[in-house]
Image (cartoon, rainbow, N blue to C red; front, side, top):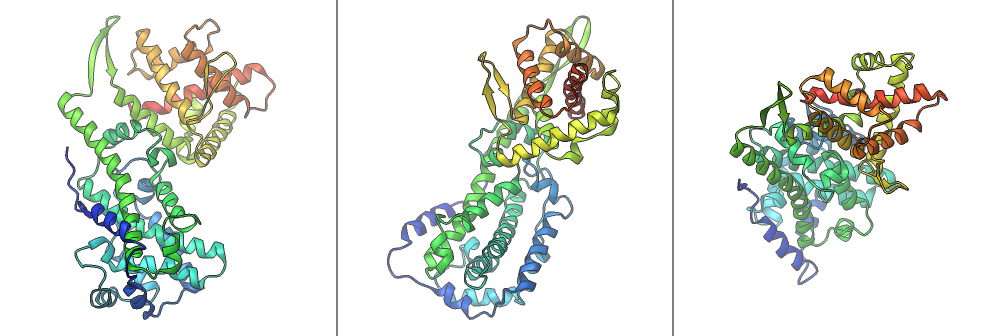
Length: 441
């Protein structure tokens, strides 16, 4: 599918401006115009901006959209009220700012919609002005990061709703994201919020940032136009890259016209799940595990704990799973969710929890399919996997590697000296993850 892009051609404009920065006469209409506008950045305004951003991030389905790798699945909107909030905090009227921009900022043609937008220009000016008036570094940077993030949220919602005017299919988007490599920022950072936080840090905090001098001085219109346009273009490129993969997956699914097929195995009808189904299971589990509240399900914990005599209470398993979730959250921050190492025998050990979950799901269901276990039967799958991982005679190298990886992860979190309890808890973690995964099949 070829994507329509209302911003098509804008990259060329940015390229022209980029090459022009630092050459010729420096026009400063933006600085001259906005310097006439009385703007106070005091404690009240700083706190109000902080509240504004926090309230936007936590409204309706915004947390689901921001704290996820999925794009266009959870509806996120930036209303006119959200837009006006920024102007009102500083006692300004957008129509007045727009009038000044049109009449006095002669360096920005009105057809350049992104950089002539009063909201974007005010945001940039506030980030610059903070450099001048806020002396305490951490307060200044937090204010600047809030303003920059709010501007990105404005663009993020507009771009996402443009590319996915009817929303995105969760299953297709999950498959698309799971196909992406580490070179994509959404894989590198884990959520769209963290992608935008990283962009804001590059703009505001990094002393070697490409727009550092522009933010400090704000005296060159060409540089200001380039900075605003470049900021939006970078976000658009990240969204568009994922969007293209999404439509490739969707179009491929349309051609195939089915996502699963049935086959005969040991006299039973078995639903042979496609790779996309397992991708969905893996992706959703990896999103859940970094959030303890989403990952912990006491009903499932009680069922799993009842399978092991050595686990004295469901709470024992719950405490361990909380530790696993906390470790996943820590790995998310340190970008080590996909870390692997080579053991002394040359085998790969999955240190990163996302890498471990991915391999655990793949290996477990492959084992079931290979041995004629109907993978639509939760009970039969869990029993088969429990037997495979508890057997001392198992020779499948992939099961052995996953088992060693789980041992390394879990043993660091278990205080009990009893080997029987340790063994049961390791296996219980595996069974719990699989049981949770069935919700996405």
